[in-house]
Length: 296
Image (cartoon, rainbow, N blue to C red; front, side):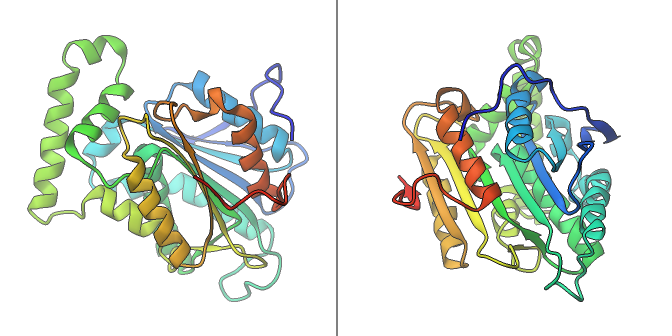
């Protein structure tokens, strides 16, 4: 499969709420949706290459874009779920338009792909899935999931590095360290006091919770992990551990372990391999029938 045309124009998005927007192509196919949950502080110029790729791979699909920043992490879980309701409504609309219901799941299954980046994206996906589960009382049927640079188990200094990376350059050099340390101390203290689940534990559990998410109704769900040994924000072994849990739960798992690409930047140096993986998940086929499921 060829990579997306870099000359293509960025798809038009309608704003649904703070950091949440929806692209609907003119010839939208009912029930088709790609959900992209970005890393903390992701710049639009970096997100665009994924948007253009999906325009090429899934031209008739809606694209739901959920962006994240450090300020979200200072909110309580209930507040985060309230803030993401517009994304939940967008997903429900896709389920409704193809006639999918929790009482009759054998007909007209939707074609939904979830693509998350780092723990910022997995946090957004987690809060969306929990809020959707509260409304729909049924797991969200997914064609597949792509995890880029995550999910991590969470460690103070790796979390610190991720948050610092998301801050504007000027702030990161001045008041950024103090702000990030304060946020992390509050978060870790709240977890230690039993006020909340540790965020990373919640992410890793929710993303494979059979009550909230399941593989496609007509075929096994697929999960692809893209991660790197050079990532100083996420330990690659954390990703491998999550992949093993996914396998145990019946998901078809593919792993792409890179040696030298930085956090959330595997696409740039491995564009063809990355877009091939996106294509396989969406179209349910492989360009190479002899390719192993694990790419470790």
